[in-house]
Image (cartoon, rainbow, N blue to C red):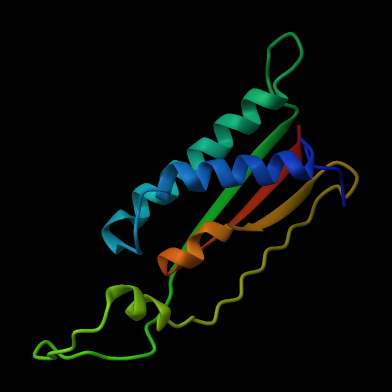
Length: 141
């Protein structure tokens, strides 16, 4: 695999910062917000990569970039009815949040010496009952 356009440490920081900016203030998964969160994540990563790799007389990056962001809600492992008289602490309810199975893969046909891809799972989503998985691809121009 080709070296990434910026270091893997920097890729992780760019992806983490983008996720923090998008969902950092959210307390839990909100389906109505996922499109906006994904758009923020993708645009933030693109802006950072283009800014940090643009060189030459035209100030253009030497790569084309493709970013995929997937947000998955954790499934609860318990059910409550509307007439439940539970006095359970909301924090205890969060501890009962379950996980959905998920597998994501990507493949491409390209120049292995210049092109590549990198995947990342945002660690800050677990406490919010969601997963964010990001794939970044770069293709040499």
